[in-house]
Image: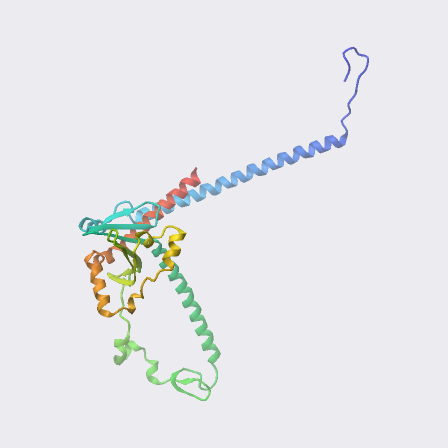
Length: 306
């Protein structure tokens, strides 16, 4: 660099090392940019594929069932009964309320029970498969020896096996005397059990809370609790929950006198917790679960598309 008057100049040289470092830095920056752009393109492809799959699932579920309109049989019950329903989209719990004289009755249930049933069924299938495998291993271990072929519980031999008799080679269905022992076939199968909590509040006179299970039109009472303070029946804080845990809430329902059990069942029946409600609740759970699933699919797709 030269001064204005031209008396002196300062010459600055760039060393190769500085140039080399600058070149490497710029090269690394360009490579990182290209990698980032490539990842973005790959991410966009995955997003598009996921969104398409979600849309396909939505259309499939909608074709199978109309989840927006309440089926006629479910709506008919609500029109005829004294219960008002509170069903909030996005929440699992459904609440039915009604007045019965000076009593405020609250019936609540959750669609989570349907998911629990599916998990229990999967666990049962896994356990049964393991049991069958263990049985097979046990049979293989007992095989061998003169008495091992075709052995069953018909007379133990010295080898620890069991001699089979001719009658045991015949299927029970082919033996008239055992025909009645065959389980009846039911194409539809039993309905799933749903837990239902019933709260009866007499306004300042305490609360009766009944834990029940409904299945196939039956209302099965499991436990009845009495609370002098209504807030304890539906404890919303840790303090209230702790207070509730320390209270004596009565024996299991099955330990009560038979006549007392029958009267308590009639007590619920008079308040609308009856066979008709027990048939309606599982069907409504199935309807709501389907509707919530579609809503969930739609929300996830909207998020992916955003």
